[in-house]
Image (cartoon, rainbow, N blue to C red; front, side, top):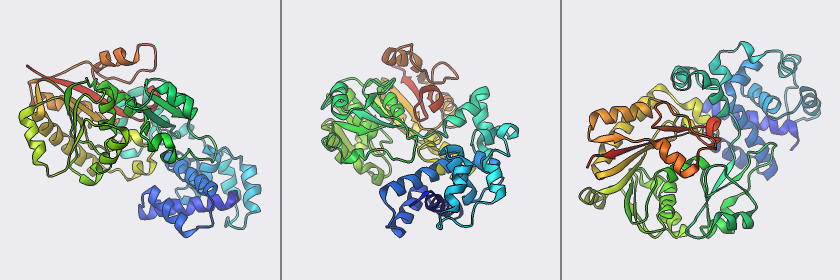
Length: 429
């Protein structure tokens, strides 16, 4: 496919996403099934145009003075993809698969006729208008910067499984660079053209459990938990088990990590991942689980609540979720988080730790949840996560954002990771 056909295809996929509210990965998959002639390079380029358009949907629509799928695809090709308007016009005029031809008005807008200088901040930041007050309240003067950082293409990060190898050995085998902060991470930089990242799941190092795909931010959060060999730990919202497996490696397989999630479908991959990683200390509890209830009497040294959230911190990777998010969804998540925290605290032993994590960057899901919990349960005390950060990652590198000096918020702008919130509370002895 030539450039025009790729942009036309991106517009078709975007129309499906915007009009039918189809998740981006499903819309791209459906398009690929219906157009089997498209090669892997074509599908990668189309996917990049689609995701670029969704990451910067508000700002592209403002500059194009149009929210149509066609306008977004064209804008993504020029404002993000780096094609010049004249280059684009020449390529599109010669491509029969792009219709109708580029108009004079479209060409002028692609050339910069409308500037973002006069746009509202929420448009400059590409953050939904309804959530902008909360976003701005959280980050103040840095809100636009934080929003723009969420529109960039993300890197592909790898966690080296220290149960099976070392980072140096993995670097020598794979050839990737080390992550800036995580001592067990490797990074493949964000894409700059229309190529795609390698399929790591087919790499022998992945299949034998030497590496896992895990964003550096998630690696850092797992290390901040500070799991110690011999401890009893409960990952209360384990999901697919990414942090569960990371904790097992940090504990050197000594002790036990109990993994539980209310959704057994999300929990299912944990079995295979633990086996592949050689994480023999992992004990999975499927719902409904009577064995999990028995843990209340045994009490845990640490309980991790990686709570369900809006996923604001993952907008670089899932940009369509940004525009599907609603006020009702945020309200539901806030209620769920409070309920999960209240239930999880029952498993913490006296002198043990309750760790609260989200992949959100909103105070409503983060600091406010922690402060409200501490009011409900006066036998818990908020500790300084910043001190643990400095102990584990040093004082000279990038630092997460913090409102109170105790909790931490990792962001693409501050730590060049996905967005994560981290807080640790100790139960009184």
